[in-house]
Amino acid sequence: MDRQNQFLEPERGGSSMIGWAVKQLMIWVVGGFVVYTVVVNHQLFSGGASESAPRSAIASANSAAAYPAERQRPQPSGQAASLVTNTLALRARADGHVFVTAAVNGVQIPFIVDTGATLVSLTHADALKIGVAGSLNYTIPINVANGVTRGAPVMLRDIRIGQLEVNDVEGMVIQGEGGISLLGQSFLKRLQGYEMRGDMLTLSWQQ
Image (cartoon, rainbow, N blue to C red; front, side, top):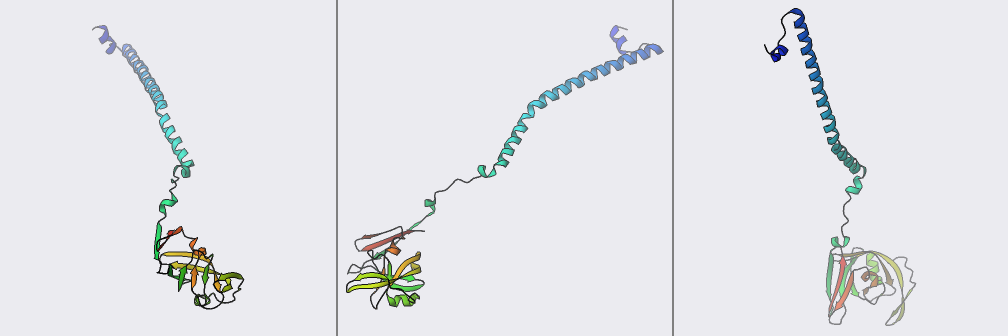
């Protein structure tokens, strides 16, 4: 029997058998310890390299959670883009005057559009129709064809012409009887613009 076989196979005899078993046990213990050390060291080195990525991901998640409003803040949109410009064309009569019927406080009133009038001016009769003719204080002097008259300041809840509506319009009630109400600058200046071209008056506003 060669040396290799002598090492692997136990020698015959009681004491030789025990010695061989002790040698085999020591070999397996030492070999197992070496394998265990190699495996543990490999896990330690590889684990340290892979652990940095999850920590980075957790840091990013915590940062996003700490500033959710900043990361999810919507981009401001242009307000002008959401506005739609509307127009209304009114044709002048043969005498050059532009007549229009407007709802004042919900009541239909005939007007002449007067770009030279400072305020929307109501006749006394029209003021009665819309319910603003009571307890008036005629303190505003007005030059008319027949001389000087006076007007009383009033606040009109709304004036509507079709889809065009203006709220809280300054106006006045003209003292005396007769005449026609005037749609003046206290209404017109609240629009986006107005233009007289030929016999057409165009009103424009945004909605």
